[in-house]
Image 1 (cartoon, rainbow, N blue to C red):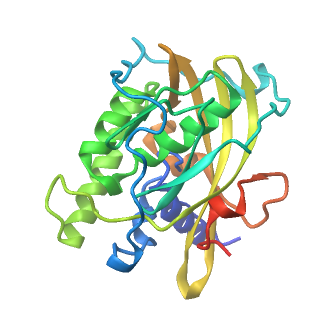
Image 2 (tube, one colour):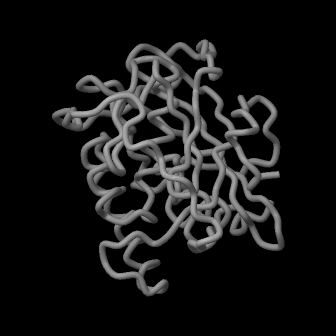
Length: 263
């Protein structure tokens, strides 16, 4: 196995995910924004509005090991989910599972259900990407992530943003550009009331017209009335990611949601 090459692929897909998701140097394989590729706007508030983002829980919190949680696959119904573009990435919304509120670039108000956990992983992971700039990733990480590695994650994302924006000639504070990745699938590792551990697969363009896929393991805890993403060890999503070449065992999102980028 070519470990250096696999790590480059992981880093390439990681930046978009928090969490997913999933992830710091995705910027190296995503195309820059083009007027021909500009997506339609995400609904400003698909379900509700007017609530403040819940504060993060007091003190650090860590997810329990998978062995102490129910590892049976929880029941989920994706048929009621609707999909909309967020800066080039299609993300799901559910009237039952959330997010209840989308205000600008923030999303919160997820249900304490398996579906709510998956939706939180997707939305919060995506908004923790350096690509959108500090106005998005800083409050997302500081307010909607948890665990002792949260400061390290914030530092890593900020460092990636500063490095890439300098090369791209983007002013400090401005977004770097749209993303061109696809949220393809997920697989449960553990679920119990208040705890979710799920692998999320994202696909993006690689060299020579190839498609690169990586799965990022995301842990979430229910705290203060909402799901919080547990920051990865050392603030490095590559430590919880792996290159994916076979989607057997994963639950695929609908083809209409996955779009055309990952054929």
